[in-house]
Length: 239
Image 1 (cartoon, rainbow, N blue to C red):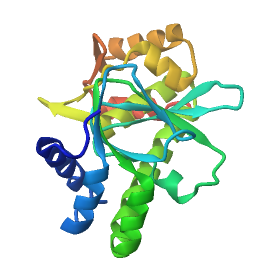
Image 2 (cartoon, rainbow, N blue to C red; image 1 turned 60 degrees about the vertical axis):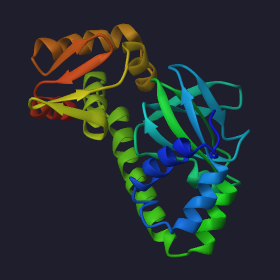
Image 3 (cartoon, rainbow, N blue to C red; image 1 turned 180 degrees about the vertical axis):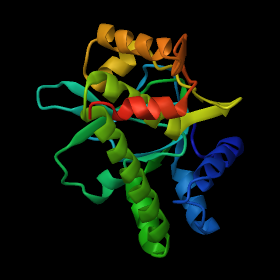
Image 4 (cartoon, one colour; image 1 turned 135 degrees about the horizontal axis):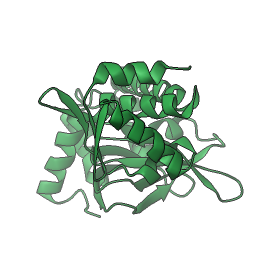
């Protein structure tokens, strides 16, 4: 973990935060206070970040992907979503402290994040009330995207839900290359199966069907969308 004292670290954090609309308009004084108390976290695939029950921190994802898991009373963990570059996590939890839902975070891919203490974050927002508008807009847009992703994972047959999940990942995090949308994350079939709460064998079968139809191309931990319209159609079949 890198503290906010190093000049290079501070520059990285400010650059990453100001790329999101939630922090674009922050005054220098407020930003300096936040950065001085924040840190850069570098995590390898599979590394555990923390649980909301243990730490009061918000996360801004700089690179890589973070798995969000819901903690159950019996100690189980259920994957409920992914957060990629530009996504903020943990701010809503700071606002609603008595929420019984506890989530924890781990790195799906090699990841870099900014870790911010939420008590200070809220204190600065209260000091500069106009900044709440940008934060609220950011969180509302994220919530809308998360709900859309969740619906695509829950409704319809497995093949439909799998196509919908890939479509959302391509939309949110895909990198266009030569007309294709390549999902650049180390997303294994086990990862997809965990997200969809099915077996890896089921995911493999439906992925191969999409590949045979020319909708996607599969490589080691990479999915390339060859036909976005066909993928969108597959996501809506049998809903």
